[in-house]
Image 1 (cartoon, helix red, strand yellow):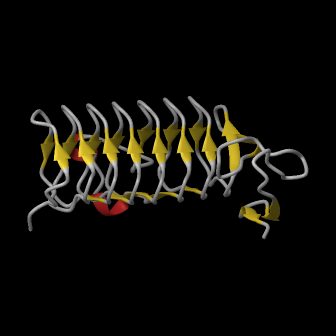
Image 2 (cartoon, helix red, strand yellow):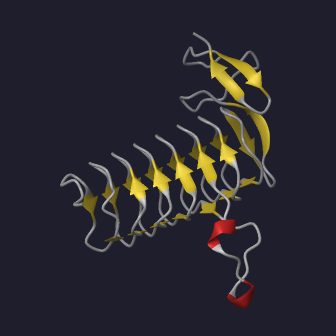
Image 3 (spheres, helix red, strand yellow):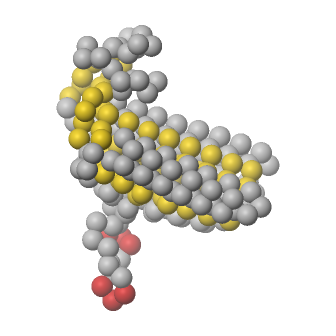
Length: 192
């Protein structure tokens, strides 16, 4: 199957997947392996690596120097900052001690989430929709929708709107959107 003609692959990129959506751009020295699925209107930055078992939604930005390993799913409109680190094996070994790939753990990043520069995402977690992961944070457990998390290990320090602004204690944004707490593990939901 041929890629959509509106897909741009830089002459110095290696894009081995035919499942790359229209108007997506793959920049220099990026490597997209066979079997990777990338949606429409995405931007894959220089020196990014996308392994074959990765699923990337529409309108996703992957900045420079990011490696995305098998079993990572990025839903629509996710922002992945420069040098974000994903893992897919909690107990990696090499050589004769190497474990089979079927022991890898999936990671899911929800719609509209932001992963700040140099964040580390340990496999097996779910990051909720519109969550905001601060630069350098280390994610070792699930992050609720709209949570603002920072630190190592990352802890919630507040809540954010879909527009990216921090919410007031009343869960109201300066943009006018309002939210309600669904539960500490689920996070926030918008009010009508």
